[in-house]
Length: 351
Image (tube, rainbow, N blue to C red):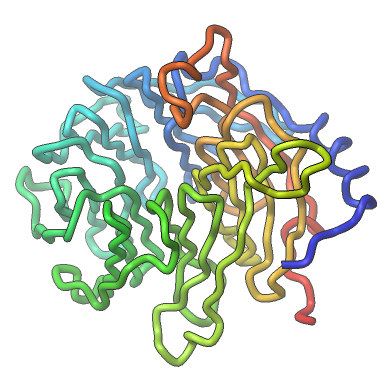
């Protein structure tokens, strides 16, 4: 990856001041966030057992619109394609659906262990995919109480993403399973993560002619991985979210987890957010870094672009990367909005 000189640093502090802090955030760490594909509404899941829905107004102000509860921490949220239902999964082993029009909540999915990831599969009718620590992915037609299909995973589901017809599941022990959703019950490919350490996040490419995904690990590293063997020459990995042990050491020996990766819906560039409190925007094709945010006062736990890619939302909250001792009183728990500029998110010409 190329790294930009001091000229970029002057811009980053100016933009950091303009990021807007959302009002009425959750009362505990933020696990996940998702924008509607129809309007600037964002759903936010938290360890305080709640899902909160906010509207983002054109000036960046936010208005709380609704809130509903799980019986344990919420680990994942998503929207259906029409933008009128919010789906969530949590440590209560339940998948729940909130109907935006009626304001009612229903129990739509069940596992034998916490549901770590929920994703909407845009088929007719739409299907909810839920990945759990019970080592299964289940597919739910919301009109029926039983799953329409269940897939057994090699290990516990840690992360999952869908960019129809591609679904990628990352599990414990670094297994990655790739599904073609035209055949959703059998893995199209199974592989070990290209990274040597525990998988934290997998996210599918957007706006890409070849299907693939990015993998982020706990060891400050991201891999860009294409699905088809013909594209394998484009696979690569790079280090990020690392710091020098002392200002003079230049050793990059402090290594942080990559907690979330979000792809821009239009340009196919992507963000990484880490336990070090920093966010970077990257261009995978030019293999270059587009932007670095000024470090936040706590780990970046979740991120999302809105449907047009004009807004980038991110959460600053404790991720338990330092265990109980890191949970200090007054640790920041914030939802932030960044207005994206073209030069931060547009692809660069390839070198």
